Length: 96
Image 1 (cartoon, one colour):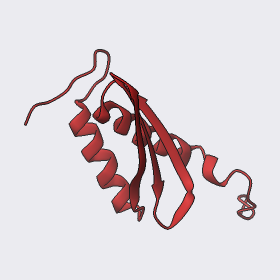
Image 2 (spheres, rainbow, N blue to C red; image 1 turned 180 degrees about the horizontal axis):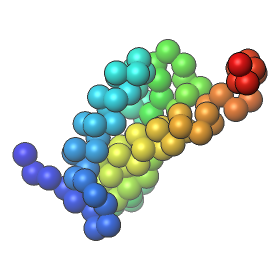
Image 3 (cartoon, rainbow, N blue to C red; image 1 turned 60 degrees about the vertical axis):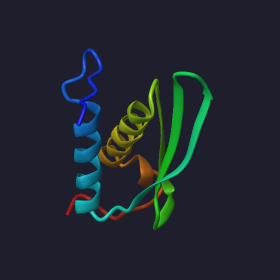
Image 4 (cartoon, one colour; image 1 turned 90 degrees about the horizontal axis):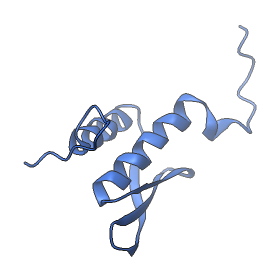
């Protein structure tokens, strides 16, 4: 299998996508690629979301489909790690 590297990135797109998808599955997320856009050559956009909660979504952009998907999955992890998806909800007292 061909590996796709972007200058300045540590891992191939294929490795990043596989790792992100597996970690999300391990955490109980069922991510689907809801829509793709390719308005002009070398410009891709993807909207991904959790099948059980469509409000947990991100968008990724890139020069290729793989780059856009890796971008969206990376953004999903950023939003999880900062509680962005749940920022507007009371989750209980965290001082206990």
